[in-house]
Amino acid sequence: MHSITSMRNLPPAMAMAAALLSAGTALAETAPLDGRIDAAVNAVEPKVVAWRRDIHQNPELGFQEVRTAKLVADHLTALGYEVKTGVGRTGVVALLRGGKPGPVVALRADMDALPVKEEVDVPFASKVMATWRGQQVSVMHACGHDAHVAILMGVAEVLASLKADLPGTIKLLFQPAEEGSPDGTAGGATSMVRDGAMQNPKPEAIFGLHVTSAMRVGDIALKPAGLMASSDSLRIEIKGSQTHGAMPWGGVDPIVAAAQVVMALQTIPSRQIDVTRSPVVVTVGSIHGGNRGNIIPETVLMEGTIRSHDEGIRDQLHAKIKEVTEATARAAGTEAKVTINRGYPVTYNDPPLTEWAGASLRRAAGDERVQESRPVMGAEDFSILAREAPGVFFFLGITPADKRPGATGMGGAAPNHSPRFFIDESGLKLGVRALSFLAVDYLGRKK
Image 1 (cartoon, rainbow, N blue to C red):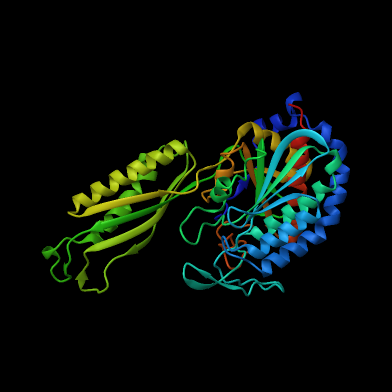
Image 2 (image 1 turned 90 degrees about the vertical axis):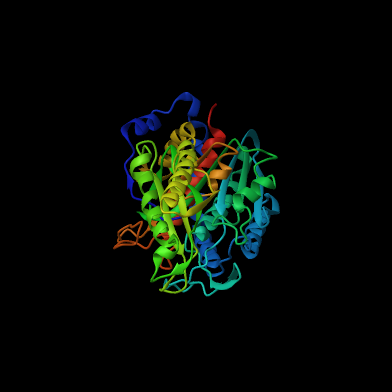
């Protein structure tokens, strides 16, 4: 998950819809459990902080989360959950069957860390080194997945204390490799789906959260429909004809053509896509060509990323990128080979479920602490799980109240993926409370 943009207050229509709950989405049936949830959340908070620090100090990269998975599995087994390990290679799936019949609801946390060297001065800072794509790298929980795991472990304990009174089944997914696979194979969510994590039993809804430095501690944000962008990789090879740098007319310069392609690609989001339907980004982040200043090379390789919030526009973007690149290269006398690999789809929050979840989250956090998120151009493979069942994903603020939130780190809190990413642990309790309320409220809601 990449950095998060700023937030704004819920629009009146959504707030009114959430406040005036229909009989079909009433929360009254589980309200008597609120006091017990509160007590259980308060009791487990010190453990959640301790788990988070332990996981933070012992981070593991994607599909290497062996220690983290064992910590999770041992905890869930002790609580009486039915536990399966090795799901999606290193994932954990657990079931808690309530004492009454009812629906199945899933909650998800991702477990992997990033190849980042920590620069946060805390006693539990990571000193871990590991191998990533053939290189020795420092490892850090620079995106907050340590908090996600600890929060869901806390939720597991809260829900286990309510087991006899739960009308339905809780399914917990502790997922590996959200940040991608080190060997280019399928990532964590895809691997878990392939291993049947969203079947037997199939959940009727799935919820997840992500901590963010773009919001102050104690705040929550969500929105219906597209919340986070699709993410596709772009590779362009421009082929010219090598020649001496002093005699460019003796060949065909792929570097000039590459520069023209970079500029032409920017006319797609600025001039060729209806951005009122979806924000889009086309970024070229890497250009490689040549090895001497007086030699015009044969080829130039460019790599980048493509983001959008609408699956139809996503397809439109792919077609236009190929068309514009090939035409621009051809006009410069070169040839272009365009390769686009589809990555994560749009993280889509089911609109009716999001309206319902907003009401539950306001019960957990208070009306004034729940906001609507602007579209976020980062991507999340929760999107893959939310294609298997209606899903809602939301953001949890973790920036200390006396510091300015910042999605970019420019004068504000360091963004997710930064070596200086910092979590105010007082916000973990709200994460436990929010997911606990969502699960209990969903099981008890009237159809």
